[in-house]
Image (cartoon, rainbow, N blue to C red):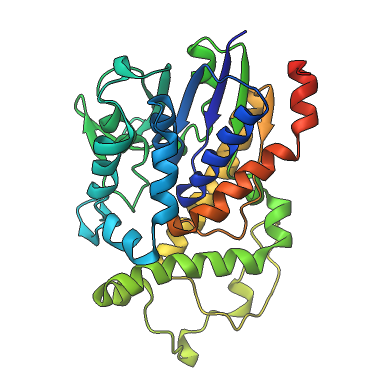
Length: 321
């Protein structure tokens, strides 16, 4: 019996994948094939290279300012950060050069920006494939491959269960980092969502003062700039509901990140319904912002806890003693 794991997209929340993998191995589960999307591709490449331990050590050491430096915040064609140092670290320290050199079968997914097609990587350069899979629209610049412009695989396939099946997995674990972004969860945790979007905005405003003018704008609202109460629409209802708010309008980067979270959550539900995994693992990550890569310790621990919560189900389904 061949076991596969599909590691989902989710930016900084993806460090939870490290804890998930560790907890599964502690249960005696041998993972044979790996598929990943976006940050799941980054962690998956390291795991498939037998370099998960050094990756964990590195991410646990990251500080907030080190994350800023690694991202290379600036104004780039097609994105707000370059990410060059992030992928250089993967190439130099955490991954083999090609898919053929990996210790276990691995695949990752990106999206063709113009056709909308899912592009799967199973051969060639691992780092180039991971870079394409991680190209979050608006954040990282798109990458080129065979005359295609590619962006984050999470646009079309945030948790690539199908790739695990393609690699020959009989049993597939799927790790969904968007579980907290279901409509009912969002209704109950609206203030937490707002705080997380503000955290994302703060990452950029702290990094470069001139970017603050782009992302945060003037927080001193003028009366004539305030939206009319009747223009505020409840996104989870077909009928607009008047509502007043004293909160500041979201920044540009907050709008982008929040919209991407909603998009990926909806696409994930659709894809998992059409191609369900055998076991679904869903860490609770509502308190973690998209760019909080420096909170690796907490994220890894929640990844481990998410496995512990369903350990009995896993033992039963795999008939483990």
